[in-house]
Length: 154
Image (cartoon, rainbow, N blue to C red; front, side, top):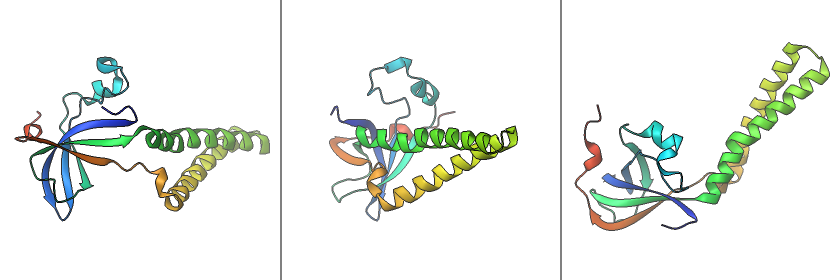
């Protein structure tokens, strides 16, 4: 496992038009060392497989076991842009609303305005700088699988 990548195993369900549908395990990634104590892994346990559609080359076929990798630094940047930036903008908007009028309504409207402005700025930033959005890489392995993730998960 590469320390600079967050990796998940998956099985290629089908390949259509240069794009593969990959069934991903939902038990958590265990890449951070938390293992069974990870809350995300506990929430995902027992759920049906997650399906991703990713571009692939001609060497990938249905039934291949693959590794879907995402650079950890890109995930961190997108998390900052998607979570931290809107939270700070909401607090700034609430502060401006409170300073402008001092009422609870102005504070709430300022918070909503700050949050919506942050979403708009993030949307424009992602459009102008496509490197902000993490792009997963599909790494083919040599083993073939028999679709164990396609079973009914009731």
